Image 1 (cartoon, rainbow, N blue to C red):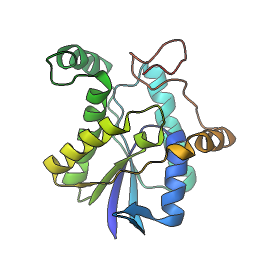
Image 2: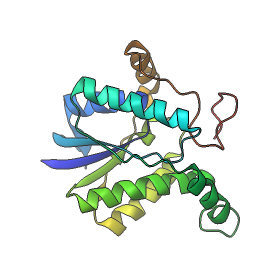
Image 3: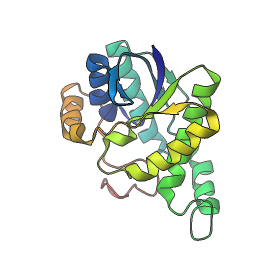
Image 4: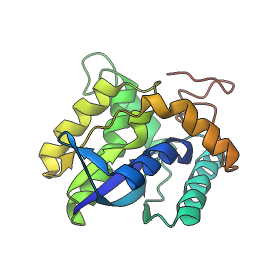
Length: 192
């Protein structure tokens, strides 16, 4: 049975992904397989700190309520994230867009942890959101899969986005109003 480390951006995005994998197995190379799933929290760029804490606590609550094995990498690094964006994102820099750097930062730490702890596969709930750039996520993840020698499995769960939002509300989980970083924070609007 494959050991999967699932990077989780927030509890509302995790609900339908977890339910599907738990009930039907994970779609790997065209077929459904039962897996040993661990949810992994690493989102150091969420702004402000109170928002970070609300999302983290919501994730912890959902995992506890459902008996889901999880790992909390409790690193809040707004200063480092914004510094790195200024230094590394833009024309003629390492990353041409901010979101690509954000995906890289979060997923690299996930792949590193997976590699060091014997996981076979990495995936992410970022691919549940219709607001995220799936092509960039996959590009970043494939490079990291090669670097860390851990398989990446892409799962397109966009069709479950609104269902997950509804279930999160029903469960009383915290529902954020923007992507998470200081740059997407704009009076509670999604701003990518």
